[in-house]
Length: 88
Image (cartoon, rainbow, N blue to C red):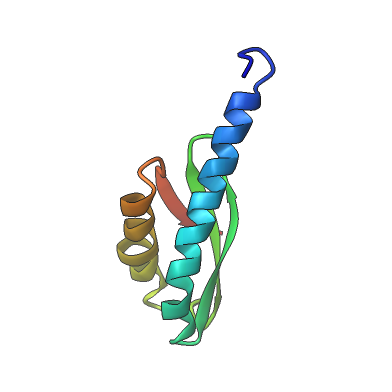
């Protein structure tokens, strides 16, 4: 793998993307059980994960708690590279 072309960074980012998508896939059934859902929008260069809450989660008064104590906590536990999770 060469250092100059950036392919190493692209492979690491793809790997992070796959890991985050897999964990979100594990979280999704719990949210869907309450009429909500979560969609992975993207991952920033600083490893901030951007998600979109959907269904009953969108606009729910407990959405902030779900984000911080649920989605973000689980993602950080399972994918330590994740800096934070923000809803857009």
